[in-house]
Image (cartoon, rainbow, N blue to C red; front, side, top):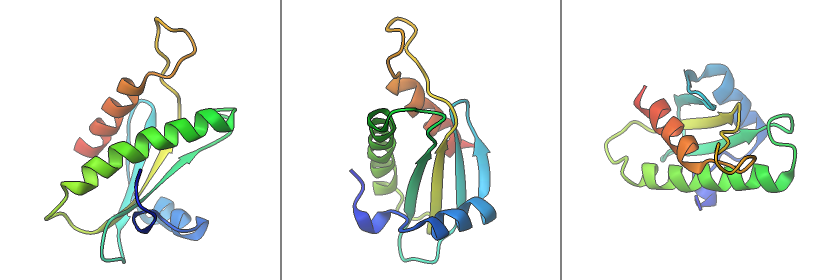
Length: 116
C-alpha cells in the first residue's frame, strides 16, 4: 500500500490536478498528471458510486491501483515530480467468472495510460 506521504491529502488538491492536469484516457480509467509542488510524486484514486456500487468493491479497486502505483513510483528516479489522479470510469469484468473483477485488465490499462 502506498504510504500516506505519497497520497494527495484532500479534495482541493485532487480538484486542482483534475483541472490543470494532462489527461490520458484508457479503456477503464483516466489518468490526470499535473506538475507537483511537493518533493516527491503523490497520487489519488477516484471511484464513483455509479461505477462500483459497494464500498467493498471500490476499496478493493483502490488497493489494486495503489499497489501498482507503489511499484511504479519506486522506480521513478529521474522523472519530474508530479501529482496524479487515477479516475476509474468502468470496471473490467472477467468473462469466465461473470461479475468478478479482472485485475489484469485493470493493470494493463494503467500501464497503457502511463505509456501514453
